[in-house]
Length: 382
Image 1 (tube, rainbow, N blue to C red):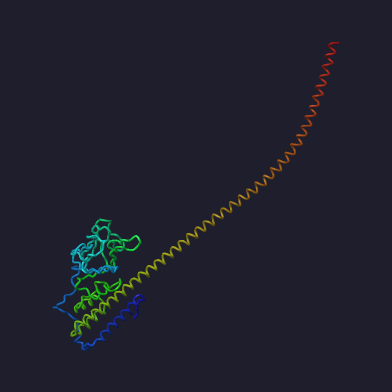
Image 2: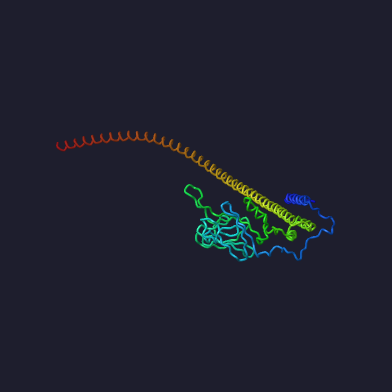
């Protein structure tokens, strides 16, 4: 027979607890008859112990405080009947394990309400001063009534807040509890579970709707018809030992409850592992996609940067060539200007010499003209 990898650990756990149960049966002083006629499934028509009460008629809510200052509270919630949570104010509101009153100064006299409706448990804050919190979320503002909030198994409820001294120590504790919900009346909840909740630290317990009624042989067949083959085999074994005492029946039912709890716990762990595996797979997929996307984006940016660098290099080459050409042209113009300056100096000297010659000629002409005028004047006088 081939098993899926995810089912194999659960199958081993299943076999282990089945043999554990058989061993506990064989340790008993009473030997089970071997004849086939003695092995029958119990079908009680006129049983004095009724089957599990109809779903929705009543539920049991257990509030397990984190602080040892407060007692564990076991509340039976009947359909649409509200139970008040509040502070002790008189002898009528004295805190007991079966009411919702606490000796805490951080609670209001009428702090919150709990009730059962359609097989669900609800809570609401009724205008308390310090608030009601479910899983860290406050239900309403100060002195405001909140909307109903559905409670689930393993929820965390906080009534009020811690009042702290100046030195940092807590003066008045809030009432902080873990919620355990049982879909049955208080009379049908196994006392060993309540006792274990009262004595043990906070932990995860079996699904309440799978718990059997205390000291009831008929409850074994009820659970066996609703659950696994383990409970079916157990109910057959218990029917075969019809002459056993009530003490043996309670012991077997306690074993069945613990076995069912371990099986449910293993299923829950298996489901959580599947969720974790899927989450890790999705995370790896997302990270892989992100890495590929980032790699593509980086490659694109590198290509764009390389293109820009090539463009800048080409532009610089053209600019450098233009600069060299401009330098050559500038040298040529400087040389040409230098040559023209030399020519201009030569021409200037020539012109200066010519001007000097012309000026000399003008002076000579002026002298001649003056002499000519003088001679004419003399001739006229003579």
